[in-house]
Image 1 (tube, helix red, strand yellow):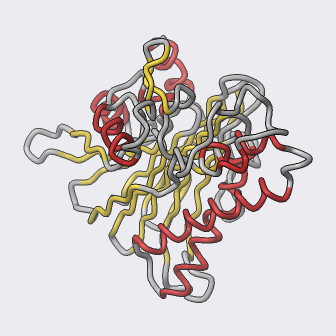
Image 2 (tube, rainbow, N blue to C red):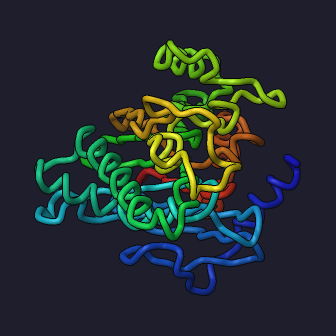
Amino acid sequence: MLSAVMDYLRSCWGPASSPDGRLRKGVDAAGRQEGLLWYKDAGQLVAGEFSMAVVQANNLLEDHSQVESGPLSTTDPDLQGTFVGVYDGHGGPETARFINEHMFNHLRVFASEQKCMSVEVIRKAFRATEEGFLSLVSSQWSLRPQLAAVGSCCLVGVICAGTLYVANVGDSRAILGRLVKGTGEVLAMQLSAEHNASFEEVRREMQAMHPDDPHIVVLKHNVWRVKGIIQITRSIGDVYLKKPEFNREPLHNKFRLPETFSRPLLSSEPAITVHQIQLTDQFIIFASDGLWEHLSNQKAVELVHSSPRNVRLLILCLACFTWFFES
């Protein structure tokens, strides 16, 4: 399987060709489509360049990703920066699509209100996006109850005024490649926290939050899952595991828990890291878990770093974005 992943990576090094509508307005959308693989070799940001790739597991793409570069405020044109989003959907494409359509807009509104970029601005954008999807589920409950069982991981990066903010719910990952002076090597530095029940510390966190439920995480088929259902412990959506009023008919029985619950089983609260960009910082990789199942953090940064400047433009799996600092 690793060799297949590497073949996909190498295929991303071809020249860009036909236009593609996956990137949002305001970013050069030239890209290349090959079967279930889409990629973009190079694009310009406020300070640097980027590459991007999406690999579909099947014909239904449940994942979305976006890049925005320019004003991060609706009222202050001087508040410039770059926004990156990787949204790894599950149960359907609706939540990831909803995040893609709303998260950045919310962030710009809150940045305008506070007249700056901050942890609180990002936290508010996540909260507003979650609340917006909950409203959508509520309004369509009688017609499309399955929306309550659709969710998405959400990894966001914001680069503004020399500061990098990384916010995450779920198990996508952001990795920084940092140059070691004197040796020329690049070391991997993980900037995001993952919320997956396979990690012992995450299971302990869940047990501490639900002391009255000894079965909040269950080992099922050798995989740790929340209530034996889902591996991730934080997400946008998955409303049926957050609001007991949606854990009932007309939602299909296969999604419903046999018992009710008094507090949300999953959280939408992002873990946020703030990093001051340094001269030795070379690039950042944002990707969903599909990449990290096959490549270690260090292997991924070595793969990017070892390629020529006009070639090291990739990293993928489901949805991936690589941002190179301006040299």
